[in-house]
Image (cartoon, rainbow, N blue to C red):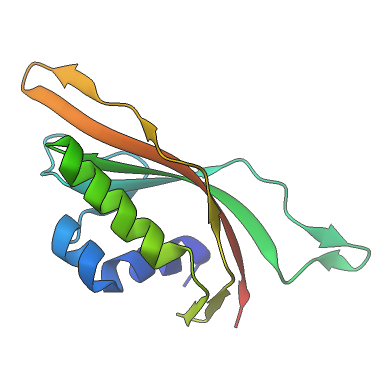
Amino acid sequence: MDMQRALRARLLADDLVSALASGRVFWGIRPPKSLLPAITLNVIPTVLAEHMKGQQSLQFFRVQMDSWGDSYAAAQALVDAALACLLPRLKNDNYYFRTASATVPRDLSEETTAGTIHRKQTDLTIRFSLA
């Protein structure tokens, strides 16, 4: 399992995130007409950490996380739950996730023909290595 699958599995295994998003955690784009609330994740270009013998075991990935909701409160509740899940240390799926860090979520709500879609976007620094 790669880090991206392990990170998604971590979110899906969290009781509160699972209750709010009902399995709607996606890498890349949110599928058209998918239900809300939902989370999308995207890797932001990152330099792989290296030393004189090659890649370090501890890596730092930047991940953009968007929490989507049909109300501002739903988007906020989902981003809060996701951050509570992702920021602490955890070992799962052959990965050891160190303490992560995050920016303060940005508000990026938008008007569509179907109404307002509320989105909270935050950038995460995910520190991890193989367990």
